[in-house]
Image (cartoon, rainbow, N blue to C red; front, side, top):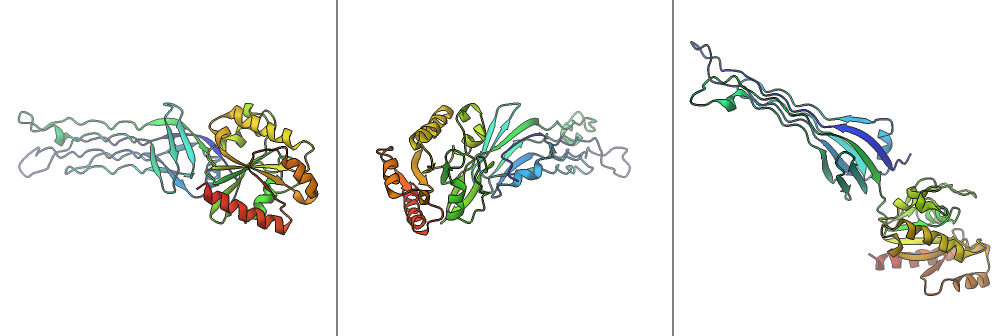
Length: 321
């Protein structure tokens, strides 16, 4: 199951306490101070992994805690550091600290970022020895680790995003171009979450369809729009079954402009889908509705058209790299 947003509460570990201890030497009640420092508290760390479904593991887990540091020991030995809490997130995740407003982006596999720092360990009494105090009985306590509510959201980083109204043929096209197994059916909102496919090394994303008013959150709303902010090229799919293809196109463009965040300026290719259902004259008339627009025609079940589209798309993605 694809989970693309998550709210959690996390706490870094508390630092261990410094201790008051003395060396035990024959003939001396107290030798020199030998209390060790407390260990550092564990940090809360996010790590980017190449697994789009990783957040589903945390769907029912809302509390994350790193380990506390251990107290100092004798012979000036430092206490053990607390164990870090590592939270795996998909590549492309944005994590917001709701307490401070700080944001972290993880765009590459293996990237790590410290979300919450562990507390410092306290100082043992050996730090407080002086010429006038050879047997200090002072040590400091460890400090608390940072604590916060965190919001994790996934923004897909795809080479091309297939966009369009519900039932525009996006999932069928993705399945035909790659080995993706996106659900396909003849009703709106079959795709309720993004599907990814590998197309000759390029990542294609089939984004959930949207309706008028999506920029204000209607339908799948921001769930759709958020996932195309990082795609390099928009493949704007319009079914040739539509009675008014231009109006359909304008509806989607209006939502992109309403949402903003750089979407209206992205490179766009209009893809007329389901070409097997109409004749060449119809296709020619529809093309006239989009003067000066980059356009391609395809059918997911017509091998010749699919091959022509595949070759053309590969060339265009290479040009946009």
